[in-house]
Image (cartoon, rainbow, N blue to C red; front, side):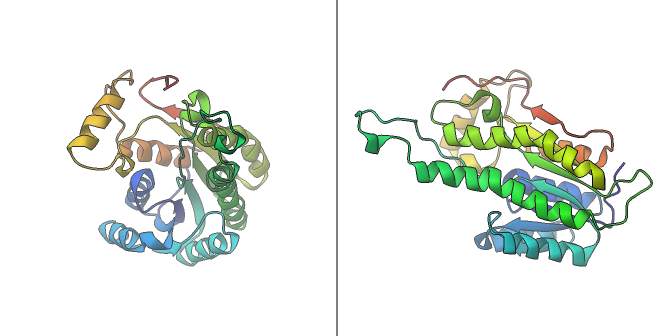
Length: 263
């Protein structure tokens, strides 16, 4: 098992949602967690760190900005050997491939497509390459392990719905590179796995009665259990994939067995 106690761990998008759950779970393992999130999320991040015992740090970071990613990793190195990275930052955008009026102008905005790919896919790889470089310089354990990485894809990578071309492409790219990057990093004792989450109950759905009704409608498509996933269930899997030394190059669905319909 990869030892996380006393090590540093990085979590992108860690101020809220699935990332925040991962931060809490890693802190419970004794890791010094560095939350990598946008500068606007600093207050949330610091509140979360305080709730976890305050053993980590906040690093303002746009995952596509290499200088900021390096700064976050350097912050982690100052807290302990860099052993873990959880990539959970991402954006979604619903737009159909073509418009309804037959004009070229109404087709999917190419800049929007590029932005989703840049943040979700390129940003994930950017964090992997920088964090893994730091991991490669740490002392290996008895198994030769230096660290582990968990990425976050989506069931849209496998069954993207109408309007999810950009999002599905970005998440499928994460799944597609998982084994390849795991093979790249095997030489330095760093494992790479990916979680493919289904529908999880996070702040993305809003709050209030209308939000609860919407989430109830979404849960109809789940198999069992008939509900949205709890962020803690995602975090539990993330920690297991980090710690379990014999899981490598895998993309694991966590979705209650559901399969997404076209819309």
